Length: 333
Ligand code: AFP
Image (tube, rainbow, N blue to C red; front, side, top):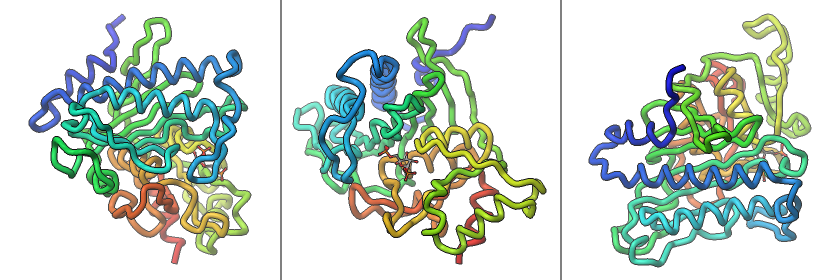
């Protein structure tokens, strides 16, 4: 049997991909790997200990009930980034504002990290897949100073790296640094992520569509027509597509990455800008989608080209197989 490559080895082997590499991004990715192992351990124990399952009793800036595991994951990541020495600040879906680290070492950190510590948290208590999503940017403010809002509000095209950890039937970490997408599965017996999905390519087309169809009567006519097309024999397969919706974007996206498919979260009256957050969810997955051959748009414009104006900005989201996203967009006026 050939020896599997661990994520740690893979990151080191690919360090030369980064122009003027100093090892700092490598070290940051390794911090994320360690946090992923800690969060995965906590997720796997959900239900066994009191401090993991259930609501924390607080509501986040988006008005959503925070789960205990949301906060545990958030704190795990913030601690890792604060002590990394290469990150000057972070922004997280769970916090009202961004955090600028205050130590001298942090002020010299080159990077900012934006993340959703636990995406799909309403699925925690029902034992359905959830995930962590992250996005890394080079800071814009001068080295030696504290991070600023300007560091956080960068378009997705500026991402240096992005990825997600999926706590599913196994724990997987998928990431890109702009040179394709690779996936690693956590082998619990050795506590290491091993390269299991090298050079991931999203199928150009698919026959699975995902959206919260409870909202269908609230959607714009073009989207209603596209969903009818998915359900008809009019599409190129001559058979209705299958509907699949987990309600954890990261898990729905992962399925599209492997099998092909489209995920849509449109603007609806209850969420006039859409529900998903540009900085924590949409941009990182858009980077992975594009790097694997897929597409991510608002239905009208490329997600990664949007200039963010606020930290918790939301956007309509169409992501998945290139042909399917293009087809969906052709229905919108
Ligand atoms: P939470 O992380 O707050 O549970 O949000 C999950 C999410 O952002 C995304 O992962 C889901 O696809 C989407 O919301 C689910 O929204 P609906 O419940 O409206 O379908």
